[in-house]
Length: 430
Image 1 (cartoon, one colour):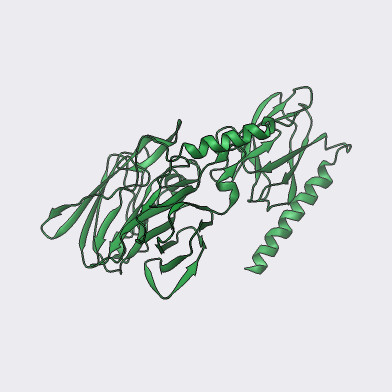
Image 2 (cartoon, rainbow, N blue to C red):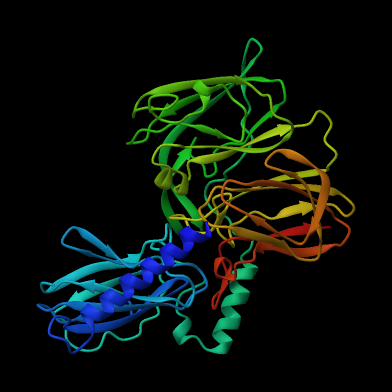
C-alpha cells in the first residue's frame, strides 16, 4: 500500500511539475495563469475570468481539510487535477478556449452539490473576484459578509429550529406480510422529491419513497422474501450487505443475477443465518449514483430478549443529498430521546464514501457489536470512526439529563458561520 501511495503522489508531482513547466506565465505556449482555491464547500473565485484564444494554466490549491480535485469541462472532455490532500496544490493546463462559459467543479462525489462549483468565463474582461458564496449548502453561505452579531443570530436560529419538520420520514420499520412461514417484504425502487432540510428538496432514488428505505426487522432463523419492483428509469439490484446469503441472492449484476430492468421485478429469498446486529441493503448497480442518492436501507436482526429500552438506527450518507443522518440534514434530523436511567441502543451505519467519526457529548458509549458481530470485550469510546460500509452497535446508559449533541467530528460536515447543518442530531435525556 505504501508503494502505491508513494507512486500516486510521485505521479501527481510529475503532472504538476510538467504542467507548470509547460504553462508558466510568460512562455510562448502558456498564455495566462489563474489561481483557484478550494475548501469546504466552495471554489474561489466562483467566476474565473480568462482570455479566449490562448492556453490557460489553472493553479489550484486545496485550503480545506478534506480531499478535493478541480475539473473543467472543455468541449465534451473533462480535464481534472489529481486528487489533492489538504494543503496540496497542482496545476491544470487548458487549451486555448473559445469565448464562452465552461463548467468547473470538485470531482469528489457530493461536493459539487454542496456548493463546490464555479464558472470559467473565457473572453471576459476584468478580475474574477473572490466570491466565496457557498450557495446550496445550509449553514455555509454568505460568511464573507456576515457581522459577528449576524453569525450569532444565524447560529441561534438554526439551533432553535431543531428538530425542524420536513416532508418524509425514512428508515421506518416495514411490517411484513406472511406467506405460510415466510416473511415477505415488498420494496419498490423509484424516484421522488425528498426534502432534506427545510425548503431543500432534492431528487432522490428510494425504496418505497423514503430515504433510507424501510427498516427490515427480522430474527435469526427467519425465512424472508424481498420482492424488488423497479420503477426507476435505469436498471437496479439489491445487495444484502454483511448478511450470509446463497450466492444467487447476493445481488451483483452479471455475477449472480441479471439487472432488474425498468418495469421489472426480482424475488430474493433466504433464511436469516447471522447473529443479532445491524446490517444493510443497498443497490449494487451504478451504486455511485444510486446509493449516494438514497437507494439503501437498514436490516436489523433482533435478539429474542432485547436488553435496552430505546433502539435507534442512524444511517449516515454523504453525496448529492448532502451530509445526512437517515436522509435528513440538521435541523431536520430526528433527536434520540430517552428516560433518565434507560439503556439506549444506537445503531450506526455508513453507506457513504467518507469516514465519519461520531461523537456524543456528555457520555462515553460502549461499543458492543461491529458489523453484526458481538465484541468479546466491548469498547468504551466517546468518538468512533465509522468507515464506509461499517456498522456499529453502541449502548448508552442515560444517567445525565439534558440535551447532548451527537455529531460527526469532521467539523466541515456539521458547522459553519451560519450555524449547524448536516450530520448533527442530539440525545435528549429526561
